[in-house]
Amino acid sequence: MKRKSEIDYAYKFEYAFDNVYGHAFSLLKKFNFPKNGVHLDMGCGWGAISEKINELGLHYVGMDADPDATEHLRSIGRESHTFQFGLFKANIEAIETVLQGRPLASITVLDTLEHVLYYEELIKTISALSHKYGAPVVISVPNFAHDDVAFKLLCNRLDETSSGLLDETHINLFTAEKLLHTCKKNGLHQLAEKDVLLEKSDQYFPRDLLSLADASSLRQLLLNLRAGMNANGKVNQIVRLFVASHPSVLPAPESKRPFLTIVTRTTGDRAQELKEVLLCLTGQENTDFEVLIVGHNLTLDNQIKVENVIQSTPDWIRAKIRLIRINGGNRSAPLNAGFQEAQGEYISILDDDDIVFSNWIEQFYSLSKKNYGKILKSVSVRQEFEPVQTEYGSKASMAISSFHRDYPAEFDYLTMLHHNQCPGLCLAFPRSVYHDFGLRFDETINTVEDWDFILRATFICGVASSPVVTNIYRWWAKGNSSQTLHDSQEWTENYRHVQNKINQSYLILPPGNAKRISAMVDALSHGGPVSHPAQSEPQEMLWAKRDIAHQILSSDSWAVTKPLRIIKKWMGERTEVPNIFQSSEKELDDFIHHAQNSKSWRLTRFFRKS
Image (cartoon, rainbow, N blue to C red):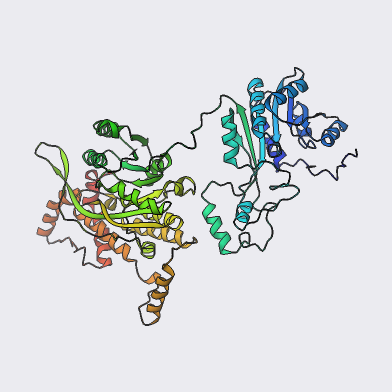
């Protein structure tokens, strides 16, 4: 039988520092493993890594099913053996025969697993050898989840080639997740990675396919969607270093998730309100939920308060509660921590001072039956509260207004682009938008972080709305809040930051919005006023400034400094206090600026939250 020449051999690849062989060698050098004994190259092919292995002082041994490859290695003075990897027992016997009692120092399995019939048997073999000899293992596989492959599959294109990502001889397909899962199950644990990146792989053809064409809106939309997925879209070959230990216990894929995870942020300052939140959850009609209380920058005293509140709940609900403590970061940090730990099919935000009715979860569940995968929305009402002291000396909160129907029953995509109409507790997000699509709360902004997340999630998931009122959004008329902790300039900057982020993205609008946009353009083109965005401040900013002015006027600092204002009035100096719902934006700006820069405001900072 005629042997293949070097030219004819399909897998004659050269060593290069930036290809799979160079990356594998770099990983082996990275750690101070013992450098004496045999290096076993399983599925060695033409032995591209053999020369570099010898530089480490190791004795190279190659094993491959192709006799042409092993004969070539022998012809250049490398030890090699022809063997077809199969079941575990036969693999171990063959390898131990090859080793002949020599110590095994390291192993490489480069672009081999995709070619063997029993790939998991080979991984078991590798794990057993690594465990017995303490040998590190470098495994590489082509990445089936490369952007080029994924985008072509959307267009029903699966183009096999003689080598590369979709080599026609491949039996098995791998993603990073699949490789790690199989290795963990068999006792191989990753120590390091050095994947080979290629923005455009050998599958980047035909160039005129719209999902591949660089400037097409379709490709840009797809890239935008995959950007946060941790999808390894630019990885051509997955190259990882493993060592063997005990197999990991992996969660059963069929294990049932709770329907809803409830994420509750708290700093521990509102123990009574937190108790009321958990009381509301105790009365839910639908009990298929878990509760993640995320303690943010808890002092020891406040941690004890939170733990006591949890301890006071009935056994059945206490079993559903987990307390997660995090330190540092802004208001987004506890949301990211809670969403990361969430096990539910859906996730909702319920802060430690809000109130939900008994139908809150049940309404989400009912909506999900016909709208699974969409964001689920019910209706919030706003009610004003203020902190009070009871006759027994304990702190409580008291409603001082009726319900305000400030928030619409139907989710309005276009209005939401302008300002937020949805308190977080009226929404339930699909778990997948965070865990699979990689959306995160933006920790670079201190305000409007919920609006930012809602917008980005909305254009991926869509929204299903219900007109049913299920909760009360508490509006604190007295005391301090985020409005007084952040000045109007910061609110404006964060607002602009979110709008610019959304403006740079490709958006997916649901049916019906094209007609609305057309009607809006038609109205403007027939004499309606058209304002240039730079010439008018958005209405959202006006309302934000009204809120800040309102919080200043109802704050402890303002109450404490009242005698100073009376003295100033006697001396002929008057503090201009605006009517916040009738004042112009400039008047509000002047009041906020003067108040927050006054000596009295600075001197009374200890009365406000830090």
